[in-house]
Image (cartoon, rainbow, N blue to C red; front, side, top):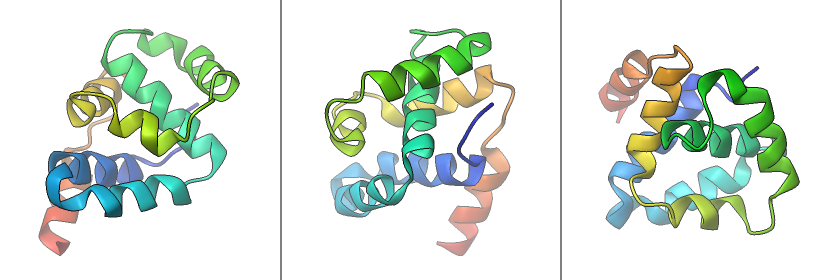
Length: 108
């Protein structure tokens, strides 16, 4: 089961799209997530880049927790196409971020 809300994933996606101006904000947001949320975020990114399949979510989360050696924010910000991978991963899990993204953009 995914241990992070779609709303939080949508936040990361939107900030990652604006990385040149929002890197500090994104880094802080990721650092404030708990360990389970950070591992889920990494797992979703892995699923989105096809390192794991959607049905392997639990294994991907366990692997992310086990292999976490660098700060999660550093790892994710070093990943090219982060926002695309997160969106693709959520789609693979059957979770659309469009409503959350629209709401965040309206608030923004």
